[in-house]
Image (cartoon, rainbow, N blue to C red):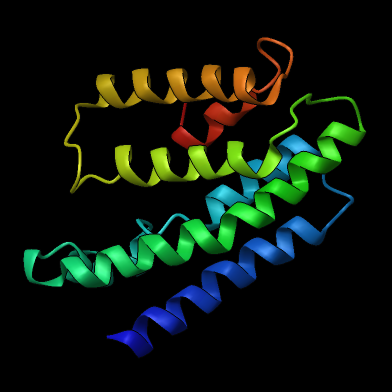
Length: 152
């Protein structure tokens, strides 16, 4: 199990790092792409996701969440720092903001943790984008493109 988590983590974190390093992509789009690279619910991972979400594999699920939070938060924080330098964001806490976002997103958007209807999911996604703008000191409505992550 640990080897599977390690292999999976290396692939996900590596994809996120590769996207984050591409300075030709605008800051907000890079944030979106990094988060999309973490989407483990695409068709190719269905069997693994079903296995992870079995009650007897709760520890494995927790380990993957821990790896994602600890591995992706600094990647996103670096992108936020670029956004601060460009005047897009204004926060003294880029790391902490992304840590809050990662923890919330990993919990609330995990079907196994919080079952939701599509309407509830859309409402949570809108609230998340709204609150990210507040956390980052971004202009209201400036991150609406983030809704692409949620298909809306």
